[in-house]
Length: 553
Image (cartoon, rainbow, N blue to C red):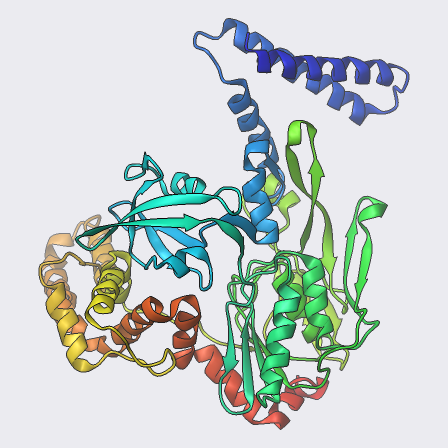
């Protein structure tokens, strides 16, 4: 029997024996007795599997699978973190790690640099987007997965790592010194016009509130007197950072969020503790279906205090609190211990995981059972489905050809080609490829595969499948054939019809080569419908005031 298995079983069994002995004198404690009994059964099962199973088993792998399967019965946020994954978990919660400071991905031929982060080693030594990684030190990584490549790039701070890179037809060598990397919570901020500031908040890791504060103070020094705070696609993170961010805009001593759970020690009321930076600046908060957890606390609390107009789409609806519990052998468990309640009294959780387990499908609160609450000014807000914006903006849709060009990496690859053909471009806010550049892109596409099915073609295809099931199909077949010919797309014509849309997508990709993540965000703001609506609101402060009063509903 494996030594590690024997050690694990010994701990399991000693614990089970001790617990069983204790519960013998506490017969009323049925639940804890059941836990001890099942631990004993589990340990015995693993031991007998190791003895009798026809092949050797890996006890660590098997037990981990069992634990994960058990936790899947609860909610997706209660997870097991074995010792070997603790560094990745720490990076997710703190945003910090030691490495070269670059996003690594796969574009078909192996792992490549997708985005070097500004100011970190990868960017300072000259690594570029689309550099393929051939070797890390002496290890050939051309056949390794992206996660393995990322692991090799990480290591203790101030240690060297040697990279062999393929760039176009050249093979290059780079010596990089790993540094402590802190992922930016605010990857971009700037002015939308002379008096309107914009802050993109992408994460809620350590120092998120400090970054937002610094951005706000800098923007105010540049003369802004109104603000757009963007938490779209922000999955959340540390609740204390959310509280500090809210405190930038509302007075000291105000309730921000409560956590309420089964145990008394998880029940807590978070309040603002500092003097705000600006409690009066007119604000718009942008959110969407991917704004979750801490993002929803920020948006929802500002809505409850009638402090900001919310624009976009209904948020994700994650109102569950997780606590990290240490386990033996340096393992950890992230476990859901409470729910979030914002100042109006509403809970933002959208999915009932208890009922979902019982029905084997995701169960949300029906509209008829959602409870009504009031904001500070008496506006009605509802619980049970995330945070709803004050005005909804329909999600932007793209033509099938645009999806195909992006998915097949043609936009990415042309962006790389353009970068090496053009030493410099205009600034990120104003750059757009010319018509002649677009014509060059169309010529470059010749011979490349990017076929796709349009919505109409899919509808006709479905209609034919259904028609084939009826007795009179032969009578209508000619009509369906004729319709199919009429809706069949022409890639060449679609490149003309959707020219402006594709030009914008190409321009944003090209900007990333010169101005990295910050430039890509700035470029995308130029035709962002949510941002344009926010600017309209902030031009008319009477409209903002009207939305934030009960009489507007």
